[in-house]
Image (cartoon, rainbow, N blue to C red; front, top):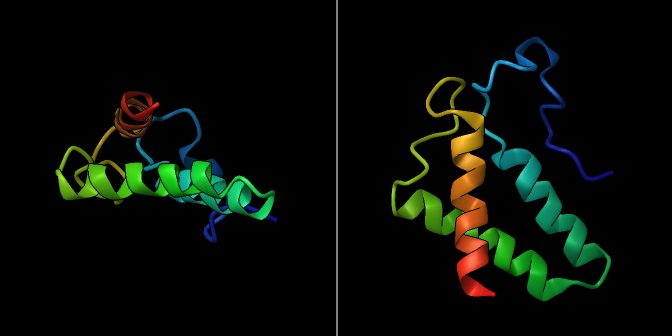
Length: 81
């Protein structure tokens, strides 16, 4: 029920070249759905902040390593807790 609209992109599995923002955004929706609105809002803010600050450079395959994007989001979340 909560997954990126593009699906799992199996042809890119294990390559570390796909942006995880769709999956992370789906997590924000799931959190809100189960009543964890503050957590969902925090995840969405972390995505937005990463994009605005240009720490996340794009969503195209290969624009930035998957784990680098995830680390930006996690780093933003961990500084707010």
